[in-house]
Image (cartoon, rainbow, N blue to C red; front, side, top):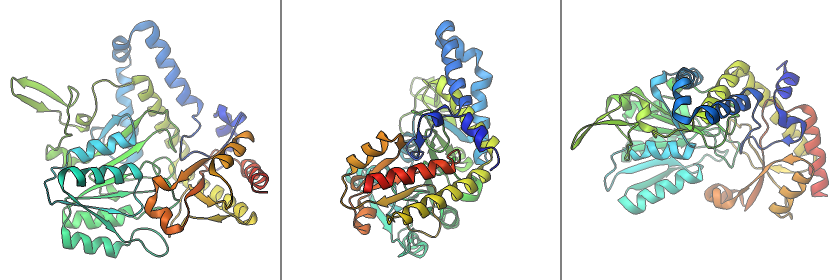
Length: 392
């Protein structure tokens, strides 16, 4: 990637922090910051409803930008407040009955695991977890056998778990679901923005995501991709509001035809236009270029960790821009604080967010380091020196 200095100049936070917490929330670039502040400035003097009317073309452009990012159509995109909200809305439209089963992986995200456990507790569904491979990642043979034995109502997979650098084979699972006519929900919270994502190749019915992480958008925002198949079947979220349907008679409503049936009527449009800017920014940089740059940076970070005799915990045939590392004999709060005192942003992953994975690895916590393409080689050197001071 040739324009790193220009990308860093576009990112005000680079002047103040060594930011390796992109899996938590990335530093926003100026076009995103400007889009949000300009919209709110206009809204402050014009009025909320009036500004959304004036900016209708720009607002509608959000759906176009996201459709280009995911290789779909604007009608398949919904704006939400978070990836978890998107996931829950998708989950709520599956017509579960007692005895239905849901198939997931051992490594799936905590909020998704909790949602399925709640469904199991309240509605009597059966939660099935496919085995993991010894080298990391879901065992496709195990998943296939469970699909054929139980024919689950839903298969769900977290593309990149938040507590691990693992990249799951979402396309291979999608092909198996398509062959068996099983609904497929993908959590792409950590993958959109750091990897090229093509929903047609994944063959998913739903894909949820956020903007604050590798897409470098504002917090409190998310999106949901909904397939044409779902829309044609008139599947709908459990709780609609007036965005999702028209009230046409006393006891009847007409469902909105596109994915915006999954939205709320009340939307923070200033944040939405910031999300549009973040999608356009990622497209302008190029998702394949971002993937290559992240691979380079992660290789540098992992080599520095090995030089410091720190063991990484990331297993799998393909690993991503999330690096988890074990630091023996240190308290996680102290590690986080000492790095922040050196202006290095990282985060801590606790066992409570990854019970199955961390128990298998024999750890109760890990330092999570998540580089992104705008990080520099000097950032990596600074991180290494800071970690050396922390562990000495």
